[in-house]
Figure 1 (tube, one colour):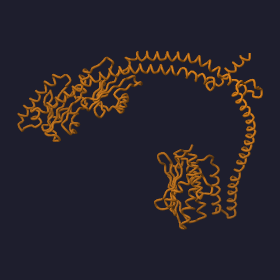
Figure 2 (cartoon, helix red, strand yellow; figure 1 turned 90 degrees about the horizontal axis):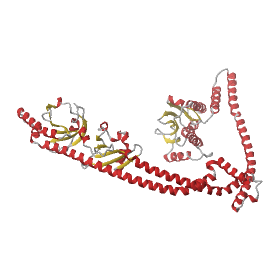
Figure 3 (cartoon, helix red, strand yellow; figure 1 turned 120 degrees about the horizontal axis):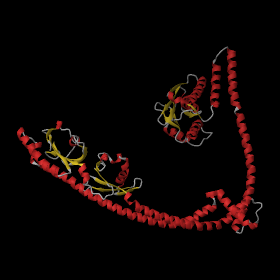
Length: 594
């Protein structure tokens, strides 16, 4: 019966603590020690078999890509050779350097046309060949001789005009008349290197015919060719031709691959293998995209074996872990029984000295906690009394500004109307009311500006004609939040430490601006100013902990309150004003009221 009760208590503790239970954690730890080695071995075997399959796929794909590279390089080299052959023909030279005899020029053009026919008709990859003459402004094609202005397939002309040498280059374009995509091999003709352009040989390679020459292993491969600017020169997907590689989101794997200098990369997200190889011509990169769907069966079988091993390892480790965890949990169960009723437990409950020592410590802690609980109740009682005293202390300021308001009305009755004393009392009463009526640490700027203006009115009564105030505030600033009671200490500091020591009339300028991410308020004075060393020292002091004996306690107070309310990115700083005096800058985040 006792054993059954303990078993119920064990399972009750497990259900109560769940994964935080020591019993459950012991099971997990034991499973880890038993199963992890088996899982690691299974994982290594799976990784190795997958690596072998991937290497075979990569090698096959690389060989296919190299065969296509060699084929396309040969075609492009042939196009370069044909363009150079035409550029060196005497007939082409006479066509680009015409004589004054128009009949002779016509015969030369016919000879050039006759030379074109064998090349175009014999090679299925060549769609057309153009010979252009700058001096005649004419172009020869298989269809005849045309004036350039009447020849509409001229979208190659801009790149030709911008060429700087006689080397052939390649560009993507679409033929004007039949809208066929082609790769045009363009060889500029000059009378000498770096000399004046005399014309060009343009060989248009049909992309339709080039696609038909691609070597394929029947895996739905897709071949692409990039120029040296990573622009797609050729692709089996015609819609991508001419675009920069990075502009195609589906080709991001290629972009990362080229940036990392890799030649093979597997993309798990798209189920693709990417392979690249440089052109033997040194100015292009060949890329091939191979779907991995043909190899899914091999990968699937490897994963099935891996998960079977995982399941067997887990079942074995779970059984062994349960037995070990139950044996290890018995002392913990007895400790829990002791914690539930420490006064009732006896020495016979524990068999080991370690558990007995733990039980004694628990009993001592229980007695200590009871004493601490009594002390805590006394402290809470003191806190409650302090809170009541603080609430009572708030009555005095309210009584003060109500009394000031009463004195103002009495003064008006005695003098028979509004007077300077009444106005000062009204300003002082309003100043107290603004200081107390707003709850929280922040106020709208218009309220803070009103509080500062009331303070300045009272200060001006005391020191008439000693300073002038200039307000330069962006109207949009009024609804943004600033620190409560932040302007008055800065203005008072500007008067006491800036203007007053000069013994001459001064000026205080208050500016407010909305910046991109913050509210910026500056208080400038044209007083005695500070030397750079003193300015640096003050900036350092106001960032330190508050010292009630410090001369600039107001600046410190404002700076630390800003950082506490808005964060360490905002606060107060002092600068030398270009016109003399000191400039204090306050920064707050852009936060509207409401």
